[in-house]
Length: 150
Image (cartoon, rainbow, N blue to C red; front, side, top):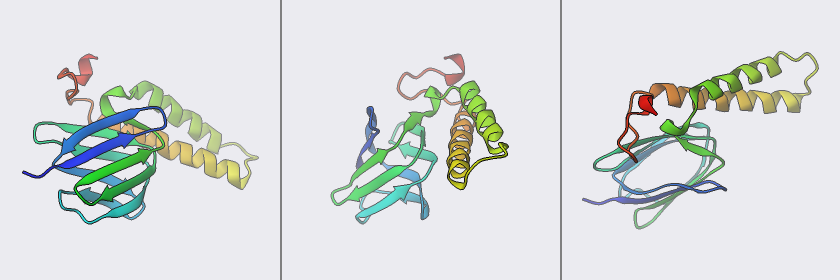
């Protein structure tokens, strides 16, 4: 079986480095699926859920944006602005960030630039909370523990 050599990197750390059978990620062109033998590609990532599948595990991650590069030889590199495994996301904290951003949008005197910044923050916070809620029942593939018990 052919695999994809995958690496997901943020400015702070390598978030995931695995051999995958498939990768689904959000781009500005829509959701894309990368399988072994995919043609070379460079695309912008948008905030959303990334699903990395090995032959034994599934990894669900939040990505805040960045770039994906699919290279020949089944190599994929993602340079993300921010990324977190679903089990690392504090749902309560993400929901508080949503409330703060929603309050920020209600401000009467926001410039167009400030409004866009707060709206982008709201979108990222909503996406992060959604990924955490959607996969709260899943186990952490790195430890094997249920994420509800952590």
